[in-house]
Length: 392
Image (cartoon, rainbow, N blue to C red; front, side, top):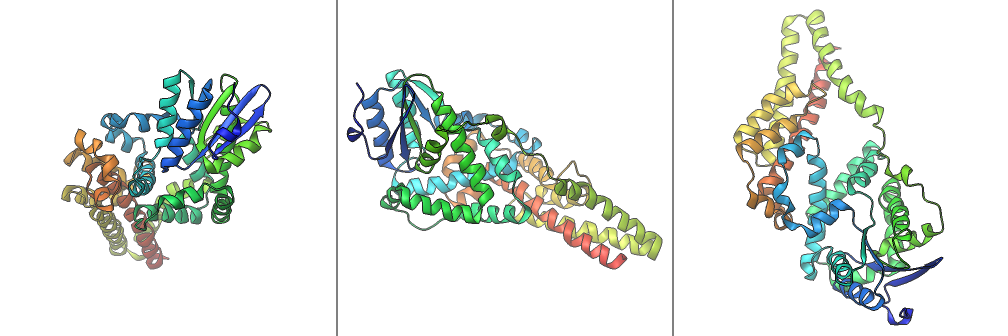
């Protein structure tokens, strides 16, 4: 016989769908109380299925702490996933800082849900959408200025210093305050909220509603509970929210158009103003592009050979849409300072501080990729504008 709602924690919401009894545990990702709520609810209900707000990638990262050992940094760079991994580490850093202040491991309530499911023999359902699809949809539907704004907000998390007490985290779990937070977030990034929250509410609702058995417990962030309830009563088209957004024409234009324009301007300078003018334009391109890419690598405390490679490679890679200066710099840095197994194992601890983030060899490679690319992009804009101004 099921326990009554009065015997369950206040964070639990009960929903009936046909014969299914679904219990949504609204949690905070860095809350000791949430861990206790998960333990008590599953122990009391003995559900047929336990759904957790994780995809397979996040599940592996959470329960297999040593999975970092097997990461191939060369493969990450060659597959153009360095910036994606860097963004993940920055976000993880944000949660680890809060967790360290509260004395609880980020995601501990999910781990507890997994453990409780195994202990009672319940079906474990990974109910969240693949994190890479989510991030690609978030990023792909943002315009240029919102992308810059989003990067600023994410990087701000790396430098979080203010204290956050456990009472504040528990207060955030209250629906009225949480809705206010989401409304503020929606005003700043309406497209991000749609992809990051609303679409995942749809996906979570579908996975939870179709979980095996008649008694289902779902461990989800408190912010998802109202949305999941709303989508229980609606038909969800999963195909639409699993598609990777098509690439915009604008990045393709910049990728191929700018190199062609630069080459055209240099050639035009040769014919219009003579060989000396054309040679000076080439010097400008090499010096500005190479120097700024090298400065970017140096800001990441790259090896001198990496800085040199950035200087030499940037003027060439900026004219080749298929290769980026940061990838060259990252591969050289990984070659001269190959990360050890210990460096990969130290990642979870390293990202908890700014110093650790910069000093860990794995993080440094990712920073080299990002900052060398940024320097080369600025160099392309500045030198290209300079060459255009003196030629036209």
